[in-house]
Length: 311
Image 1: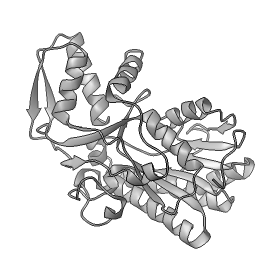
Image 2 (image 1 turned 180 degrees about the horizontal axis):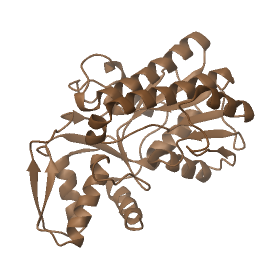
Image 3 (image 1 turned 90 degrees about the vertical axis):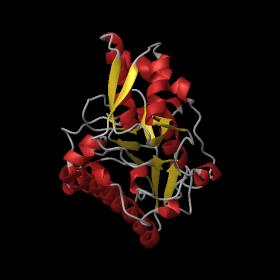
Image 4 (image 1 turned 135 degrees about the vertical axis):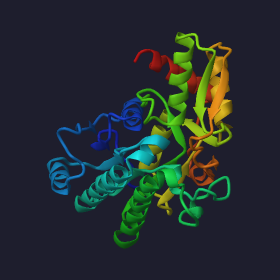
């Protein structure tokens, strides 16, 4: 493999405090990478190109993993549309451009499965991008991420860089966001069902009808994918990264209820949106390059619930 990143190479991880970024740091250390660069949001505003360029100029960065983004579930995506499109486009564009300006060949850009059309065929192949309408509740976020994909593709085409765009399914794990309104569905379920246990509730209310299907993956699998593809040259810019494991929202809720040893009823608020009916990725391309998810839902849940209890 050419352009392989050495164990002492300086690797910049943007967004290191988030769910994915903190996992990337953990897994880089686990795999023996000793030279990891991070910087807090209050010291570097990634939305400012001049400041980002200056930061890159001061450090001899050899690889970048960009996990920095404004993210959230259905409520946050719907409420903060302007922030989600503006901030994300600025953050990713500035990082990609600075990578180019400083001759950094290996850069991982993280997107989301929501970049694909709402009603596209399943499992979702990379070639389905831009082949239909997006889910309205997260359209601004999806458009921002699509612009990042196209920016990487364009730099790869014009300047022969090797920027890779990994599109993961829903991820969960330690350091997740459990805010009632802005979290993704799986941490929201964990918090809601845990609180029902503590307060001895007989029932819980979930959004939508519970029939929407979601693929989920333990975050360390995604972090390992970032490290794997940081060391692999690919013909393709866009690569799906999924677990090939899916359930309905109702099935996930029942799974957590059973794991916590509860007997509670689930009611649905059908006035609230379901989101995309189904999202499962075709990850054959990633597997062809030697990566696949390893952590089971059982093991992943044990780890994430243990970390949740410590919050």
